[in-house]
Length: 201
Image 1 (cartoon, rainbow, N blue to C red):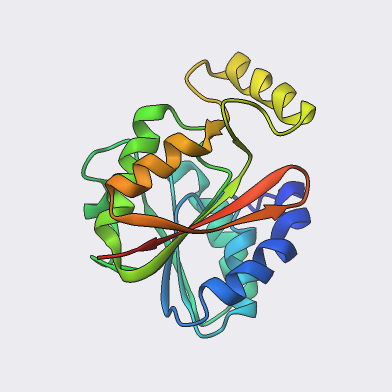
Image 2 (cartoon, rainbow, N blue to C red):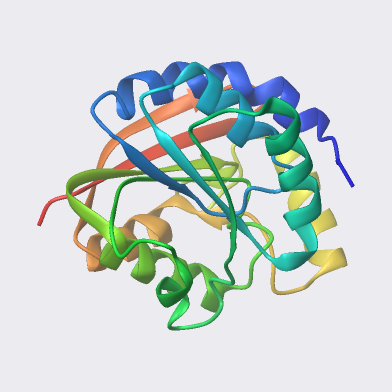
């Protein structure tokens, strides 16, 4: 069944503006956590030079496929089953390497172990000089960037105690451990950010 996310609708254009620059030379991008499938269709339509590999847990595949089938784009790829909480999750990706990885609003709904596994796997999948783009809300210097993010974090933890808005510094440390260096930290609407790391070897 085709699902719809208002958040995807609202943030797709600001994200696309960044991806046009960040993935200008990329050709094969893996999206981790494609969700409804809206982002995949929108970005693939506006970035026709890319092959956009969708992925998610099986429960989201029906919606992703519905969006892909309706759009009928030649550069989107059916979702692969991906659970980054598994240490060997990269073995389930169709390719062994990508020159771009994108993920939106994922780290705050995962537990910390899954976040660690995701960064470690991305470090293995990314080609040298390729980029990982991560969109979402993040804390800085141990504090929230807004009152709305504080309320959102409380809601997340009430729903699942192991989830929550992640600290930028902790994420950047994971990236560094996987041979990725922060390239740009973009300010986005509604107290979100888009972090771009570059694989340096």
